Image 1: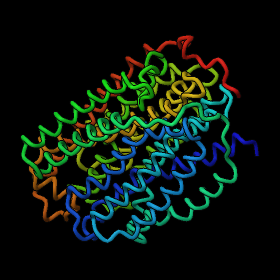
Image 2: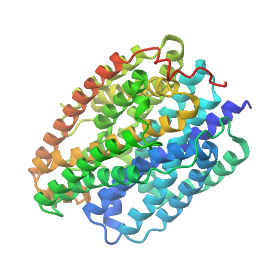
Image 3: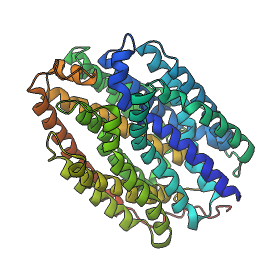
Image 4: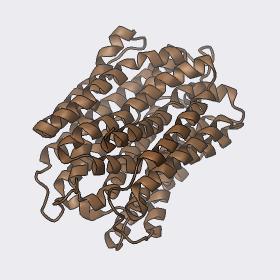
Length: 482
């Protein structure tokens, strides 16, 4: 087998596993809330948010570390850490333990996400990158949706702990295969240097914003305390940008954003993540919450159209964008996704599978059309020695946007539903516990969230259309070494 195909097969398994674990827990949350001692609504949320948040926080730095010490080396380390974290999660005895062990998983996922695209870009020539990155990037979004289906099946049959245990044998084998098959193609170009101040500003800023939103929405702190956390978090993110603009070796290389092809791709990715980050979260509770109360298995089946359409269109758009350029695939993907979200903003409380499938297919098809051409354009716009950083920036934007999207969803829910109703929905309370007026309020919140998603998706048209080709000469990769 040619080396490039070994790279693609291994990295696709890695990103698929890490992406599946982003959402495989989501559909099991009501069951975990009932069965795991010491689990509150806040704990349940942070089982999700902790994983996404820490992954977003470490990605930028891990991207730089890979450019310093070798992408393959840190990629293999990430696989091993992720597998260990999965094993620990399966043995969790309390809600707090599960939150902490999910953080171990997140560190491993950070190494996998930050290096996969860079390793693929190194291994494939420019005229094949779109297709290769398309397959790999689609695995991230397919994994996020497939995690819901697998989580529903596993939770309904052998129990929620096995959503973690199934990762262990796959992770062990893939780690050994990566160590045997992969090697460095680009020599580390940077001297080791850690941007400690930038790391602290970014990590604490994003964490405080999410703490303020989640704790405030669930009334674990007062409104004034929640607002203060959010304001301080925003200030720290502003300080982060200031620090990075003056840091000799920043974790966020702002010079890359002078390239309009790169910056257009990054901003489009961020807006898409803000729009789609809460998509599966909302759908899971729409299907398992009032008034439907479907089982995890049945709820997972309802989400098959998203995964199937995304898996179909993702590789196709990547292959075609190699030949015809990415712009029209990006635009069409955004428009199709927006149409799907607008449709979802009108759904009734008890849509059948047949009625719900068309808008889900539109959303999935649009994701597939957009994701791989956008990532290929982003990675090809930077020199080989900066691809670790570029990959880290892209996936950080994706994860940070998705995580913030969950926070925005909580704010909307808190404005529409009483506190007790939100807790009952998140904890998987039976239908007799949830009052009759909750279903209508919950549906109203869902309509608002999906309408906002459509607006955000359409706003991504602006950076997608305004991007320029070719990139400036100072950042053009004159020699790829392929």
